[in-house]
Image (cartoon, rainbow, N blue to C red):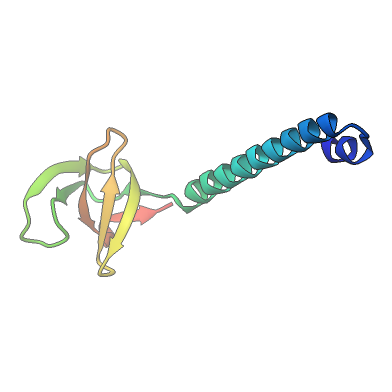
Length: 109
């Protein structure tokens, strides 16, 4: 609509005004579309899992000899952040704690 107003306008003052508003609204619309696509991609790539072992030790690093940070129990829902070496998953709890567990200790939902 702003482009039509610009095109049909006879005065150069109005043409500049309509053109400026058109460019600003186009830039705003483009940036909002870009942000929405990024948010959509983040939301669709999130993976969650449920702990199916009675007690699972969460390690600081993805190996058996690393320090145990905390334990989680059966039924705990976790967010999967990263895969490592096809055997380890980096997880994040709802309270923000993160660590590494062995992949077969949870089931991805």
